[in-house]
Length: 325
Length: 143
Image 1 (cartoon, chains in turn yellow, purple):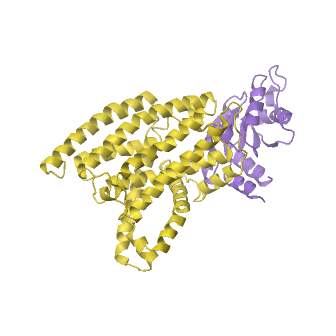
Image 2: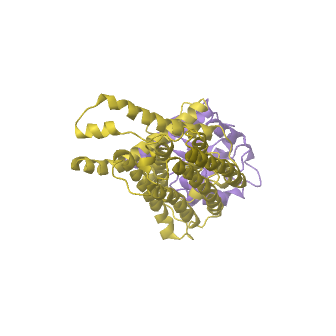
Image 3: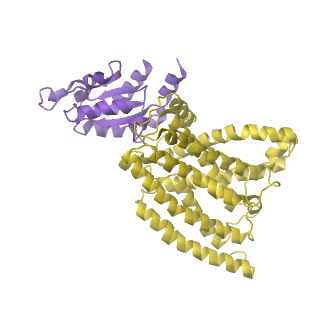
């Protein structure tokens, strides 16, 4: 990477991710609308929403812990931005990794949920308290499954903890990793707070639960953080399971050489990302909300058993050289 | 036009307050979200908390029990916001004018909290969804 390109990357990456996130938000709403046989919102709708929220009054509840309440959205936003920058770095500069970045990614993915728990429990609202307790249980539920699913991938790729090296393998073409991919997809569904795992935000029972007391610019920051998660989490799945996100074409264009043969890998990478996103949207639109005990049982018992089987299969496959196990 | 008002017109999020309606207006409001009318085309979204809302859709005559709650919900809505009185009862108490339990109509109760509140009226028993969309468009165009 030449120096001007490096600088350009760091200037573009944050606003670029935000714009992509708002676009992904629009895709979610538009595809949901099409599934329900509606027309759906215009392309710039998520942008209008955020601009409008920025201009609204910020109300802070009287009994709230003001500092924590105000800081939590920024912490969540910072965590998810850091995650997306790390993932873009894996895609754009695969030659300069640092060891164990998959572990950092796991920690950064928890940060928005933790910030949400902090912020909503600081808001002194009974509905938000119910939402907080649900969010906490949900985090405990899916984190175990997600880590186990990533262990399957790590076994499959020969014990590497490096995202750029994992991205070299299309791990999903084997029984164990297919299982792990399905479970990880559902974990991402829960991380994004999509139906059937929107238990913490359930609008019909706890009136948007965790986000209830947020208004104005603070809510806009939460919406932006969620938009960036819509980019970062499917991108993480693509990098870990589906053979990485190939942007060699873009880096070549930045350097001033146009290489038409490299367009196809880029288009294919974008297709993989959109495929993961549309899978999430379709699960969202075809399932009812589950109760929190059902969600925990699902992640710990059913997903747990599937993942233990996947780990055993992957270990056997690795030791005896059977690549499809 | 300031950017605040411009963006508010592009994405008015509504919160639905029932202050003693017979459920008929409420069903017509939910009707707005169905594929036939699909108000998400205009960025209108039904939200779960008054703190997220830009417009309150108030239905029903305001009963004695509901009046302080309506005022509290209005106070907790982040400004700028618009109040819609949906249906004959909310606009002018309708057939419940002489009811012993009625303290409404909606505009009187809201003006007790905020004399400068922006209130739009959509009459009808219940108003047609088309009438509600037209009311929302007209109210937003005078903002």
